[in-house]
Amino acid sequence: MSAATTRSRTPDRLCAEAVDLARAAAEEAAAPGVVGEHTGLTSDGDRVVTHLFECKELGYRGWRWAVTVARASRAKVVTLDEVVLLPGPDAILAPEWVPWSERLRPGDMGPGDLLPTDADDLRLEPGYTGEDAPPPNSAVSEDMAELVEAEDAEVTDGPPADLPFAPARGSLAAVAQELGLGRARVLSRYGLHVAADRWEEAFGAKTPMAQAAPAPCVSCGFLVPIGGSLGQAFGVCGNEFSPADGRLVSLTYGCGGHSEAAVMPTPPQPPPPVIDETKVDDFPLHPDAETPDEATDEATAELGHS
Image (cartoon, rainbow, N blue to C red; front, top):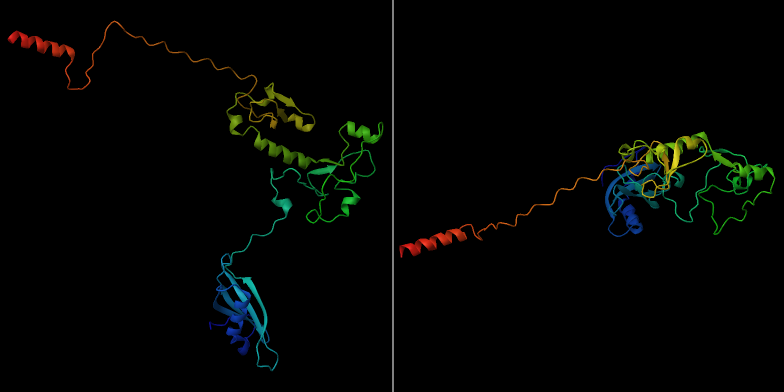
């Protein structure tokens, strides 16, 4: 048995010696062959001791089987209390749980997914609908305030039962909707700044595409203006050949599809090659082979000697 490790008091002798009882309990609770060596024990109270065994199961490196044994006052029989698997100081643990609202990233939503917004979302502020109370499906309505948190809420199939109806013609709600005010909440100044920073980073002046562009989007004929305060800094690209087609782009963004980009001149074409067909050059098939002229001279010399 290894040396005992105490927390606050000396462990009970009979409980400390019950290593075999603790090992048998751990092997019964664990899979075969995953209970390792006895690594120590701790005193949890009067006549209560916890024995620690190494865990050899894959995926639980650094974990330990903790078997607690105890005995009654003046009793000589040690009994089993509980068997649990606990992480040690060097154990591999799962990362801290993060709520879904903090794990969500742009592009994670798919068809049919719902993304509820909190009633105190900093990106939104109260709007004007012309009604005394927000619609029942609004996050700031009394009906929604009585529901449980979004993580535990059950979402039923199909559209919500209480959809807002079109306001009566001539009412304040109809006028508010016509002016673009018929919403329970609108973007706050903080929400506008966060969105503008995000769009500027994706399609702004500091992107490599904009750095190499011949001119910014503010002078491009394909730029579709937008209203509101964001229209002073952003617009929608309408060039189907641009990488930002259909995207909200900064007025300082740009690309090679600018409507007023200069047309590059056509590079000059080289003249056609001149081929001399009046003379034929003889080339030997082998470096050591004789040319036809040399062969003729040798033949003439032989005839002269003969």
